[in-house]
Image: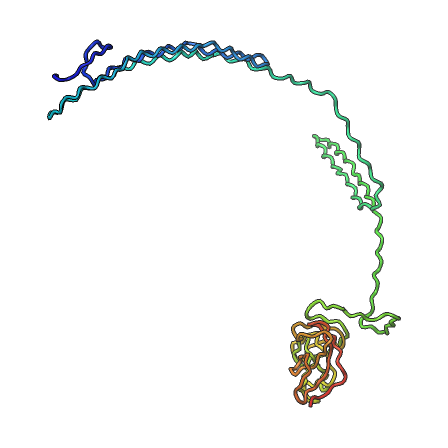
Length: 360
């Protein structure tokens, strides 16, 4: 092409257009890897582990030389001519040189096919011929002081009756032998046990004789009643004239000698009159005519029937039939009578005062 600058390429001994790249020389072969095989594994000794086999001197082959890279000369930049109105052709790109082949991989030695010997099994000692000593016989305890049970009645021997003799032709056979029938010995009868002492006979109930209390002796009441419905003191049995509950304040009706509910509002000689004999019901009665029991003097606990009591404060006949109160009644014409003193919030020492007044 006219007007293009060429330069001489010493590698190809040819003239090329300026701006073209020279070709890269081929890559040299990779060197051969030496055939150093892996050594065999040593034999295992009889009882001892064998030595590890010698590893052969496998020499790795030298790496081959890298092929010579030809000189890469950059061509001269073309002469810039005067400005032209025509754009010139772009030069061709030079060929890239071939890559050389890779070298061979070194030879791997053959795997060993021989297995080493296994070690010997350890020697087992002979069985012991010595027998261990026999342990001591345990100590026998002293003679028992406990009478043994009565012995069993002796076994009665089972005397078998002999077979009846064979009846011969014309002659009678011998009668069989009867076995001995021996009765065993009767077992020993143990000693009869001692008869226990006869228990102490308590006091008769009811008592028919006076009790003579000596000095510093008395009847002791339960100092701490355990629960609602408990009492300790002197009681009087009788018949109810109405339905009564534990803790009700009652009076003995002089007309029929039955226990009925006391009421501070009752007039003298009327039903409920609290001026006479008083008691606290400790045996509930379901209806008129049922048996009942009254505490005449002593301690009584009635959580349900009593109001909250104050320790040491007086307790009075209430204006509701059968009730007791802790505040003195103030209604006109009511009976004011102390019946006891509070010992806990629910417990009272019942000891009715024989004196009473009528509020005016």
